Length: 151
Image 1: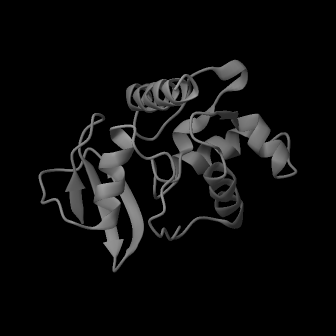
Image 2: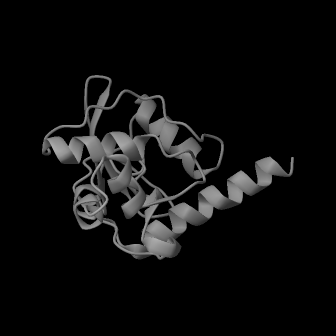
Image 3: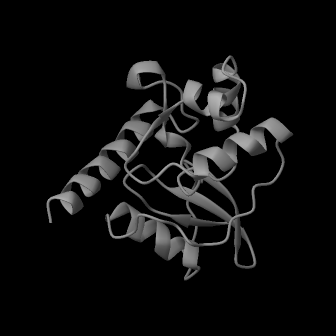
């Protein structure tokens, strides 16, 4: 694991070879590295990068959780979906809470953007990294998307 300093605190990044298999909030002191994930995360936080291309492997999780992670990976930069919309997309409109639980179990947050999933009406609820981190991530993306739209 290596640590990437970010505006939302240090992120521990777990890699196997070139593949990212985990991102952890609040990682302790560690060394940074020249790994592509480190560079892409830095560029994401400066607003230069809107789509991660680093290889990711989503390990563990139930079949339902893996389906949720695949859906959240599709949410475009600067946009949000509700837990209910994802549940509906997966064919189970009543599974919004289960979608929330799956988001909380996302092994690769930020890169697989579970912060883009919000409650009904856009309400800021639930995030494994804490609501303040979620707010900062959404604000960053909104600011960058708006700046690009006006450029």
